[in-house]
Image (cartoon, rainbow, N blue to C red; front, side, top):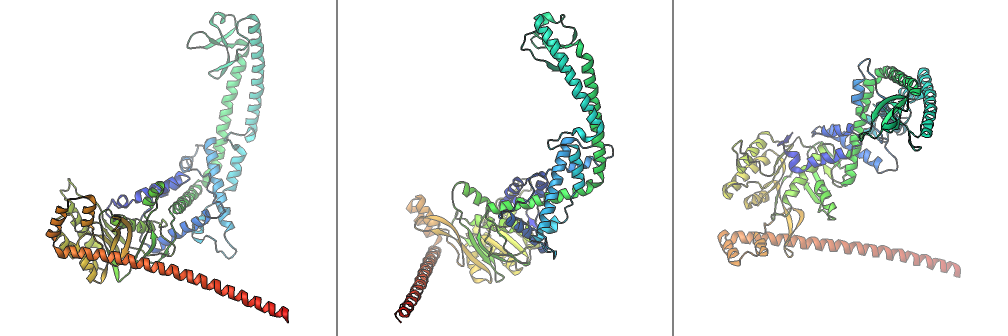
Amino acid sequence: MIYPDTFEHKIGFATLREWVAERCISTLGQRHTQEMTFSSDFPTVLHWLSSTSEMLSILNSDEEFPLGSVRDVSEVLTHARVPGTFITAPELLDVRSSLAVMSDLAVFFNAHRHDNGHSDYPHLDETGIKIASFPLTVKSIDRIIDRFGNIRDNASPELREIRSQLSSTSGAIASMMRRVMSNAVEAGYIESDVTPSMRDGRLVIPVPPMYKRRISGIVHDESASGKTVYIEPAEIVEANNRVRELQMEERREITRILIVLTDELRPDIPQIIESLDIVGYLDFIQAKARLARDIDAHMPALTEKPEMEWYHATHPVLLMSLRRQSKEIVPLDITLTRDSRILIISGPNAGGKSVCLKTVGIVQYMLQCGLLPPVYENSHMGIFADIFIDIGDDQSIEDDLSTYSSHLRNMKYFLQRGDASTLVLIDEFGGGTEPQIGGAIAQAVLSQFNDRHMWGVITTHYQNLKHFAEDTDGLVNGSMLYDRHLMQPMFKLSIGNPGSSFAIEIARKIGLPEIIITDAEKIVGSDYINLDKYLLDIARDKRYWENKRMAIRQKEKKIESRLAQYEEDAEQLREKRREILAEAK
């Protein structure tokens, strides 16, 4: 269950849905994109993800997945189920194209299915094995229409005879027309470069109005300027009439042929439509795999219970946005356990707290909608029954709700329905009202979340929540790191210690008068200022020791590399010594 209804828009998933639709080859796949939904059923989610992962491996291989020319002909086929109706030649070309895709897919899955029944792509094969092939129908269509969608002359003996007569009659008309025009040119009625035209399907001669009575025939039309009239010579009127009759006979025969062919195809229509839907679902899966490739998503280790051990997690929409700007995204490593289920993130404004929160929301939601998440393969992810979110301002004029009232309404909903399989995502917890009581209520709510063993990621500036997280089992502090020297956010999450809001430092950087900053420090008191300084020092020291550890690791690697090289050199010297001694002996 997802709450609230605007969840997808708040975390950016609506954009991902559009991206999947754009990567579909056909509207068949796009239809499944709209049906993509959240699931908390472990076998279902595992099947979705495994199918997409298998498709990704196909896309990354040299093998082509045969989906190229599928068409959505389900509506055409549905109409053709009514007796007496028929499928037109262009529509039959699309049907034939889709049937060919079904056949190619059946061949593909058969080629990857072994004698023991196992498949190279077992989860995709569960879907692909349901696709039916219709070779006889394809052969019937090929007998009737060519690859351009035209009815073949030999589709029936009657059609061949009609077209033969059409050809000979048209040839006779052309011969008569040349003779009439040659005589008209000799008589000076028309210019030598005049060519015949068509009016209402009949062959006519363009003639100046002054000579229209000199040529025997029927006037069919005149030009807009009135300087040309179009005459059908009397010699070819009968022949033109015959052509019209033959054309009507041709249309009637084509209609008869198409009705017969549609009658042959009609019993298979339900199964064709069913297979078409399966092809559309495979198109949808390949679109998900193409998106996974674009956002560097992978198949994590999946468990049935809630679990969160993520490495190199990114928000896909932010990733693509920064990539277009030739910028790098800062990935998140985040681990929550049953002993530390709720992460309280603090740190400066514009430091990345909300982005971190939305990243957690969209990555988990992607997973449970069947999209491979943008995390490294060594990540471990679990299944949540519910995801509750409180991000942004939901105040409502119609419902007479203030910002804070809307937050409280959400908290009430979360507490009524939350349990050990619930993930809550709350931005600026306790904000929107007087800080002291807001912080107190937030702490009380947080305590209830913890008592219910709920999981969560919560951002805040409140000191009491940081202290509460430090002293309470089940909660853990985290901070968004800030470069104190450059006075700019690093957008990097650090779990284990609370973060400073850097309010005083940011005020100085902006250039706020020192007297205001001094007064502010006096107002909040030395304890608060000292606490903020301690947090800064802790963050600074942590970065210092992290850099130290990294430098030590690099030196250890260099020493190990040198040692390996020395051992190799020593072994070569020993071997050389043995060779020299052997030669000397």
